[in-house]
Amino acid sequence: MKDLTNSHIDRKNVLNNNAAVKEIYDQLGFTGIFFENKYRYTLNQVAKFYEVDVRTIKRLLEDNGEELKTSGYELFTGAKLKLFKEVVSQQRDIDVPLLIQDDENEVVGVKSNKISVFNFKALLNIGMLLQTSEKAKEVRAFMLNVVIDVLNKKLGGSTKFINQREEEFVPAAIREISYRKEFTNAIDLYITNNKFKYGQLTDKIYKSIFKENAKEYRKVLDLKSKESVRATMYSEVLDLISSYENGFAEFLKDQFEQNQRQFTLSEAHEIFSNFEKLTNKIYEPLREKARSLMASRDMAFRDALHEKLKDYVSTVSPEDFDKFLGEKSQALEERLKENIDVFKRLKDR
DNA sequence: ACCCTTACGACATCTGAACC
DNA sequence: GGTTCAGATGTCGTAAGGGT
Image 1 (cartoon, rainbow, N blue to C red):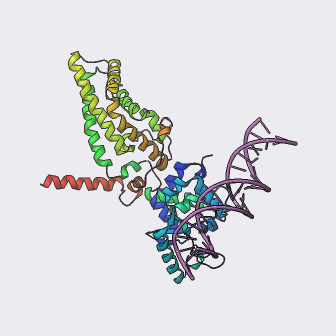
Image 2: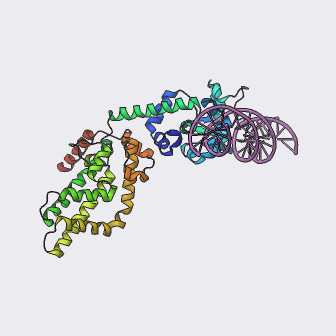
Image 3: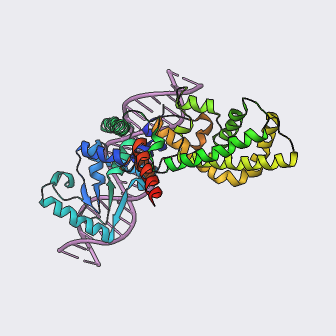
């Protein structure tokens, strides 16, 4: 079974979700020592919190050092340690003593030359790695509940059109519409009548970019028959589709001018394969990026796995979480209203 | 029934700034 | 300059779980 304790990607996707982490901190009620803009916990506090031996936490540090460092684990020494100690001793005066004193009622680490310090994310990260601690198990369940709550609150329960919540979506969708026009025009003019020609060539583009045809894509995202495939795509994917459509339209036109007659649909398929070969290297970097963004975001936001892109699933960045869930994310209607205003302003000039 | 692995705790030893 | 003490690291024992 895949869960937080054995999936690096899932752990990152909880920890990169800043809105969720903040909510978890507010609800958990385990106050840290505020130092350099973050809430900090010493190694001993962390061990006590999860009711495990200090050695156990240390072993996690040995085995998952890099991950924990990325989350915000730090080893304080020298000047930084001195500063930290000062902050700690001040905190003792304002009555948060339990957190920073050990059993002998001493301030922890006064004479130590180094102290392991966790920020809140690293504290949660530890909770995701501990296998048998009951407390850690509780914290994990709690974290996931909050993450689900946050998602539901931000999205009103549906993640289907989460792709539309970032600033870039509307402009990308508008661009795509005009490039789509170029594409369908070229198909109209240079390919003999065949009612399947649009769908088949569009599928070729989809397969070239993300390995699925429209039908497969619909299935992965569980779209109803009336729901538009394009409306669920991320701006980066839309832009790449635009490039393909525009590029292929021009390529087809060139071929037509050499050929002096319309192509059949099966010839057009061959022409597309040539186009694909010719542009393979050009599109490669953008395609890799689009695949990775699409696979990772759909996993994190839509709980949807694109089987053919499973090697591309990685973590969703904190920026992405903000982009789609944060203050700047919006519902499409607001986005459109905003854009209409822009058009109006331009028109008035 | 047996062996192996995993996760963890207990104990021991070494290190090196900070403090006196 | 010696003492102190948290941290780093290593080793061993054990309980639980899984596979054969």
